[in-house]
Length: 340
Figure 1 (cartoon, helix red, strand yellow):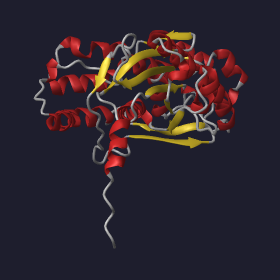
Figure 2 (cartoon, one colour):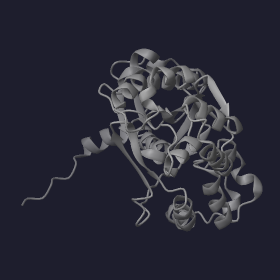
Figure 3 (cartoon, one colour):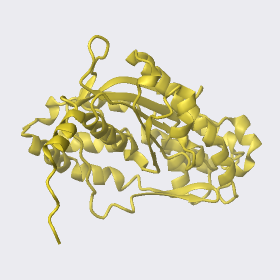
Figure 4 (cartoon, one colour):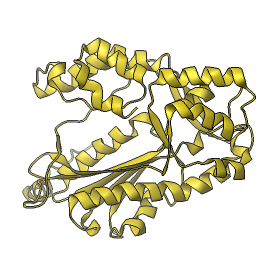
């Protein structure tokens, strides 16, 4: 076979001209939650009342202990007791309720994503039509047209905005979206990337069931919310202000961990498993090697306590394992713990 011809000087010049001069940076941040907020200490009462399960007193007491151990402080919820009364099929995970759940999140997720996005755009200070790329991720639904498409009229984006929709990426969805945004911003001069993550736990919601501990974990751990950031390189002056520069992004697979977190569509919403016993251990056992693999190629010999930390707050157990392995000072994970 013949060799591939080298790029001509003109092509190389065009390619160089299309790339940004500096690193990608987060230029603005916005968050949003549904109106209903339930403190963790009140959540067992809400959950068992809303699912008509107050008669399961032993299971309710067990759930209270689960909620305390998970370290969550409060949660925002799209689903109210009124919504659950209108959809009794949501309480029994064996009932066919997938279509009804998808109908609700098809509207609710874009609306929540739009709330967070509008806050980010307002902080950014430029018109929404200056957004060139849109990256959206959610585990709540799987639709065509997707959340990305719905956001165009909700935000007043240009029809030509370049969209990427990520579904069912689990807990690393936000990081995956930021990694993609970094590449887009640095390889497209002048690009301004709106990154949006939005989640509703309605897809996982079901009532308590004797002998099904996973249901209690799912309900006790998660809440509803959305976050949006605007990413771009070479901030324009005056006006744009880089909050965080994105120097590097990496991803790795922990061996033999594919069973620890699973998710799949069922007739009753999402099914799957989250091993609260194994996941913190997987993270704790591998966190230091992952950090070394990330910083080593950059020539940075960082001490872990010299860094600013923003860890995905999957649970207090995950934060505790990271803290123990890396021997972090007490304040290092305070920001992450505050989001539990």
